[in-house]
Amino acid sequence: MTIPVTTQPFFLSVSGRSRFCLYHPPELAGAASRGAIVYIHPFAEEMNFSRHMAALQSRMLAAQGYAVLQIDLLGCGDSAGDFSEASWSAWVADIIAAARWMQSHRIIHNPTDSTEPLIFWGLRVGCLLATEAASALDEPVDFLFWQPVLSGEAYWRQFRRLEVAAKAVAARALENDSDARKNKPESVTENTPEIEIAGYRVSPALVAGLSASHLALPVNTRRVSCIEVSAWQALDESNTNSLPLPHSLPNSSSMSPSLAAAVDAWREQGTSVRCAVVPGTAFWQIAEAEDCPPLRAATVQLLTEGRDDSA
Image (tube, rainbow, N blue to C red):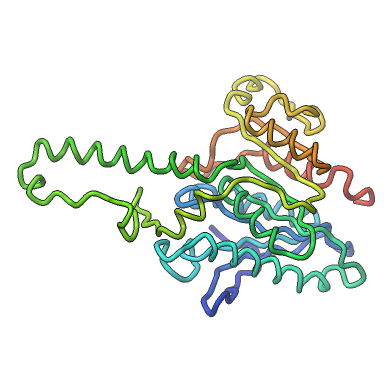
């Protein structure tokens, strides 16, 4: 993918090792930044499948006046380390470092105003990491959730199904291959140093952190923008040109039941929550580069609605 001229690639040092970043400065000439956004990518192959959408949305937000930072976490993408070296705590530390970098650059874009919101934008497991990292910061953080995972334990069980499927295929091969039976690998146990699933070696520290995580907002959270992508709604709206408006879902009635319950709970604790369900495919599960224009449009609308009357 060609990097636009305005995008600034660089390496951020975290604990003496490099993390690859892409910084998209706000592009509204003569205007202060509307906010500082840190993008937190999803887990394993979902990160690679969603790169195209993340890049499109980052550039779109920059064009709307937001400063956006994309970071490859430890062992991911072009950052230092192997995936097997990653731990949940290391990833949280990466996000905190990215947030502090963004905080230090606020004065460049808003020399007279440092009150622009800091926004953590998470996709899938990235939402779990976002809330945990935000809890370690002194200032409040707003959130943008794309297709949020609510339970790390449930997600890990789902991810392990890939291993079960691979073992089933291997077992059938063993039944028909005497040489393979002789060289059958040892089974994975709780004491195995790491687990390999779908080509990713996952450390016990990463498994433990992911499994213990759940989507809980810090007590000082002011604002959440939450969007689900629905293939069913894509079929339902295939003959229309209209996009679902965020304010058309005041009770989260069109969201999945589990996420709707979470949204209602966040509102009960006093957090301002804006949400939308948009038509589209699960691009984070598709190897080909996918775009979801309704998601990108709803994201800008949710972030700017009611926040900046002068925009």
